[in-house]
Amino acid sequence: MPDLPESLVVARVERPHGLAGEVAVSILSDFPERFAPGSVFLWRRGSEERSLTVTTVRPHGRRLRLAFEGIDGPESARTLSGGDLCVLAADAMPAPPGFFYDHEIRGWCCEDPRGRRLGEATGLENTPAGPLLSVETRPGKIALVPFVEGIVVAVDRPGRRIVLDPPEGLLELAES
Image (cartoon, rainbow, N blue to C red; front, side):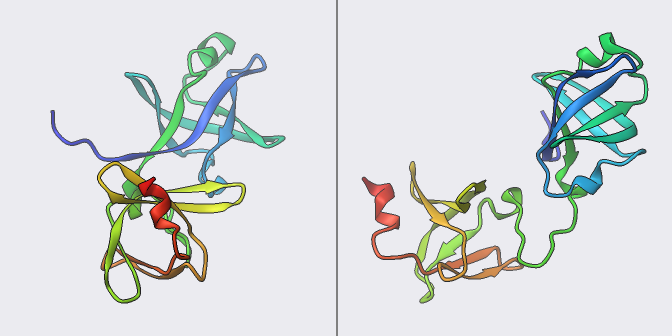
């Protein structure tokens, strides 16, 4: 099977809303402006996939109500429930200064300020306490490092490298 382009989940379809085929979606993107009439998303649920074009967008509390071409009633809207709306990683919104996508930092080398290899970045997760960088320090051993100024000394996008100065013992927590 050929390598498929990586896709990013930007929303989750929760349920149909009303009688006109709208669906309520939870936004999983830091860029809600991407949800505009004419926007095209790849809808996925398990092995099912289809392309959807947005026709209308309305705010609905912390969610959005979206309507799509060809989805014209509650029955067809219900078939989308539980699916993810995705975009190709190549179509990701440009990252603002100081912002890094989880998909882009995976595989980057993590090292200390002296250039000693600490491990490999395996992900970046936003948590209520702030972003956490997952660093595989050894095969199967993951350390969670706060992705904050003071611990993250530098991020070299072109060099695919993150310089970390973690508090003593933080990386060893993954060893236990």
